[in-house]
Length: 104
Image 1 (cartoon, one colour):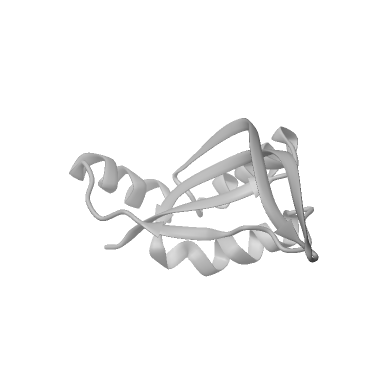
Image 2 (cartoon, one colour):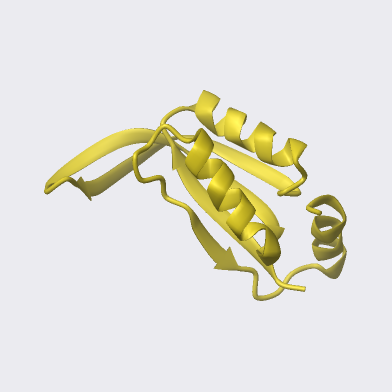
């Protein structure tokens, strides 16, 4: 089974909590970590911009990516939300099994 970590930046801690809660309730992710007050610098609509954001980190199975992407796009306030999946190359077997058991 393949596992991924999905990253998405949110406009606020509340938005990150709401998205995490929706995904966990549907059991699309086994775990969500929320890291508040991330300073982001980026290009947007032809100019350099910056924002204070909240990072949402999700642990799940690769097979759940499309459903998670759709849910984030529906729930997110950004016009173009960051939704990036990084493969988990290796991990504690018991932890990976826990992901399987909890992200159905």
